[in-house]
Length: 147
Image 1 (cartoon, rainbow, N blue to C red):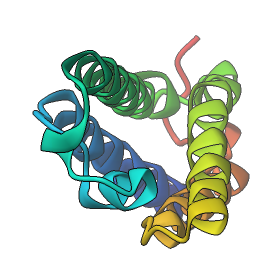
Image 2: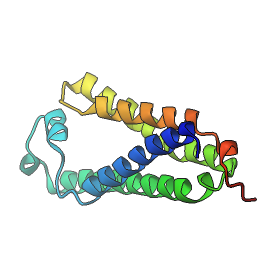
Image 3: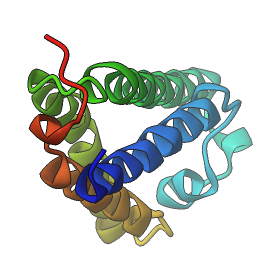
């Protein structure tokens, strides 16, 4: 594997692992994150039970989405990308960009509109690392070409 493809692989692998970790945190959350409480302007216990259940369901759904994206990116890296299959680069882009882009945009919007201490720079950083990885990836340069 070329240095360029090794760098691409590393960038996307870091994103995939981060997505799995983020997904697990939100999927298993039992209440809102501290910055969500900041944005709400109230403590978790002060919310009505229905509002807590709704927010928890949305948080868990957010987590399951990130977990799925992380697993999909990992699978695409481990199999078709390593085999030099050209379609895999586009599949990686189509899998990660919508979720990572939306996360970066929405977390920044939440921070800027509410003043909450949202970790949006991390989301933007992951998006940048992902785009760099996709840009560097060149499956045609693989030494092992399998149809």
